[in-house]
Image (cartoon, rainbow, N blue to C red; front, side, top):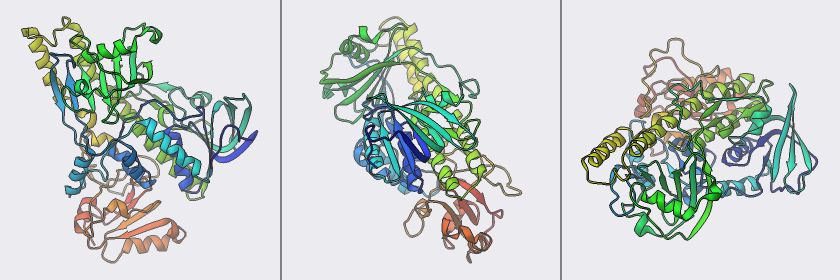
Length: 559
């Protein structure tokens, strides 16, 4: 429903208030609306972001967005699917600059072909996609404003929150007029970013001490310059790339494979952006270990400095149990690995279906309790992985900084040894975009996930590879059925019972024991699908709305 800061009455009420109108807030509100729950969405900014921010939507996020009907349009507005995700490691683009290593990563078209050829369930259902947040966010806003169950108010700054066992009262201020408004809701979902006022109001702290394997990331100021340049003669001097990682720690990101780029380059600790000549900083970054390399800059879009920060909220739910955190308000990542928005999409989908089922009378308090129990461990692991990926880059950048100026480019024995060290280091540490186990192999654990009486040994887990299993809490494997339809595409919007028995004995029993759930449960009977039955390991599997296993039958042999 189209609303603006001008239209907001003094008092508003809704079952759910979503604070923060970035991608995570909008996906949360959209998920609630798709499941019949009215929501109010407030965002501080009048317009969507101009910043590039997120760049990659990973395969697991694409699966979730497909279930919301958003993935096809994301492909259309994103980077064309034929372009690879190759990453080049270089001493710079000035004459004499050398390619040190390369990560050859498939394009969405190539990954989709790999998925079609897969027969063992170890691949995602959908290929990844590149799309800048500025584009994705603008698209989501148009959907939100057309959705009748969402009242969206942009230009509203969240101020305070008062939580009681019965309800939540939130105060927001119109950024144009200064007028205050009160919103009454049963629940609040804070999606208001790293400096979340919702998190602060709820008294929830961020911590990094509980992150297993956490290694503090060097926090130096990094200059970000988002620009337009069609100077491909220089920028593609060493080949087409998604990321160009430079030996002193800088990076160039191709945002659209045409003329839009983002450059990140480390700066001295006390840098003031007002004192920076942005064009000269870009030239120096591109030259890296060699002399500055000028390019033709058509337009500088935005610029800023930022510092790395890793952390996870100590709780994802408030003490009074009516406030939830999602996205950057719950966990802070750095760009390496692309876990920030992708983890947030998982949060949004999860809290959306759980709140909707609870408010629709289809689940109890344990459903809401499971949000923190399931999503926080995922966030902790992803934040730790982001730090590990960053360390790969900081290691070689540190070696270059410790060497003589220009040594990374020269032909001295020391220069050759330094380059060989980097050439060995980079391919051996390429998990940054090759971690399907992290992205979609995580296994959830909570009171709403049921293990059989004698479950046996849990399958191995790999951070690099997705292990196809229906162990309770796992994402169910995708596999093509004999009619050419993916099994994921047979799953309903709510819970789905997949029954491989010849006579549908589990489906019949579910209908007998829980007749009131008949209209909310999708039953998929696949008596002849022996390959899928083998991959899915059991004769019956109950799949949740998020495609994770809620329960499976105990026997391993097919009746």
